[in-house]
Length: 530
Image 1 (spheres, one colour):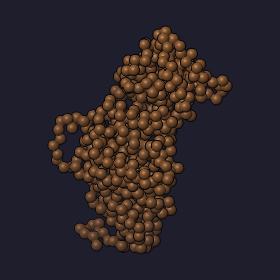
Image 2 (cartoon, one colour):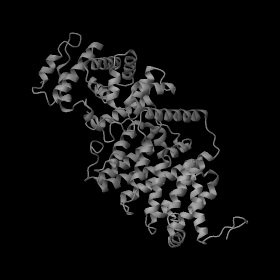
Image 3 (spheres, one colour):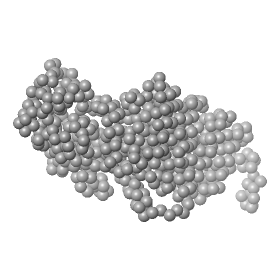
Image 4 (tube, helix red, strand yellow):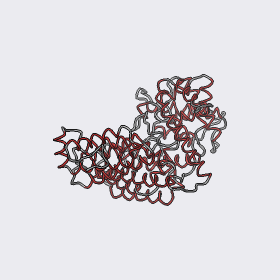
């Protein structure tokens, strides 16, 4: 499948193009029903392929063309932000997208590949989208009370998500101290709050989470129980549920900790079990432990004589309250474990973005049972519990937050493209336009640091501060790019001068260099300039 493992086949760019077209059509027409599936497809079909260094240039171009189509749609990026970046249960898809295209826009020795140009155009489309959203915030619009409440809810969720991310690194080093910090911030008031943090916190090391859940202290046991109850297993077989549960942390090595964790899992699963396979919670617990032992037996290289299916069936006789499980059921469990190992070690669970990636929770590993079909099934189920698609992205309420979260890499990318591009290449004019739009949005929201950064970067492109006055004047006079950069510096200073801070130093450096070179004349004591 094109969604799994290493991404699309290198020999199928046309098929990939058709798939991306289908995704665009689904988003355009049915997004309100497909919040979870769209996250999985976008993550696996777009971001994972683009971020994989092994992806060929032709495949990357096809995916970027598809991304440009999406980014050009009026509300796409805003929809990404409010539905995923503002959700505790999702990755930061908007932020991850913008940071990728910024990074990939950097030319090598001033030469752009086709994929770099496409990434740059995606960045420009994102800026245009932010600019239009910023314009909407300036227009008086009547918003319903329900809409304003939803905006407030999403902002609080995003703030919580950021604080979770900040606490994750500390938790990996000192769990009690991190949890105390979150409690002091009012984010952890109950064991359920702590369980939610452990399940969705970005950057948490799975090993540390497993060790914490396995401790025997009363508070740890309360958190463990709530943690297991956070999962939705209605309709899952025991093995499917166990796989999903063990993908969220690393099982500790100590048998007593394993016992406590599997017992909590058994209680939570037994409450939700709709198949009627198990006659008691104890039966679930014993069989769960048996599956884990089977997994170790089948995949531990140190085991010389491996368990057979007959051994497994014999070991589980009478487990279900003195009755036997159906032979077909046990054979299916044995076959599934034999063919598809449950990952219980850190090296088995490392994803492309790393075990402590700040990107947020991700779908199950490619090797998980069921492949993309399972990812989509899990996504659909999680959507039912985490809410449907939020359609307020295009109102502009979140435009400022969207800009604040990415302005650094955006300004850096635009500045580098502007500085290194050939003046005869159309991309230079596009870069200046992008810088102008970025400045306009920064000015609209009063982002002083972004304006200072923009002015400082463009003043470097003027070359007026890089050489002695006489040489600078000659270089400036011969360079259309330097002259254009100076016009943009002056335009920003005139329009947003009251918001500039350190940026005024760069403006005055440029003006005084031209004044000393007698290219311009300013009568500081009079009323005009010549």
